[in-house]
Length: 207
Image (cartoon, rainbow, N blue to C red; front, side):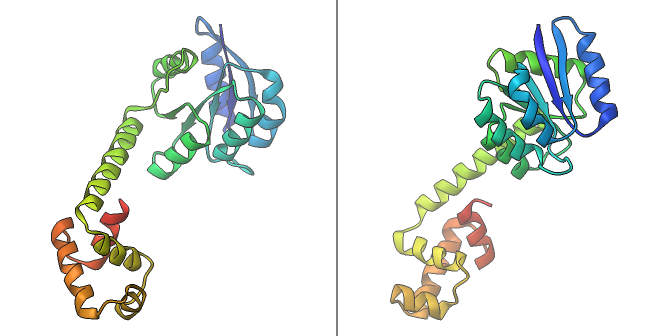
């Protein structure tokens, strides 16, 4: 029997998930909390196998709750169950200690399988979330390869540009002329396949 706790301030959704879990063989809803603060107070003592955690709640958000809960009860496995699918929220949640990331629009049977997976040691994610994670690593890898194409001096020029420095400030800092800076930039544009200073900085930083 896998015990599940829910942390979400949508009462109707919580009740619906709880009823579904209790009617599914091998699952039981152990507790429901409508705020992160209440969850932090009671979940360590509840000791559920799996927690379903929303992100956007009144007061403390779910990501901060995950971070604090993993300190209080590191054995608890936490699945984010949210409407947010932007890359920043995904990585913040995973970095905070969430084991998986699911979107609320998933099918009921998919939720059960995800809970089974995380309880068995997996890290389930909705398909669209998994694609975003993979894409982010691919972008980071390309950015790393792009950096390797640049000379140390070209990287130094780009670092200065990323800080918002003007050509004269870059020249003073690196002890080179403005014409030399322009030459470096021309080579940078060619290597990174970009047309502007903004594009060069964005690609260099992996955005």
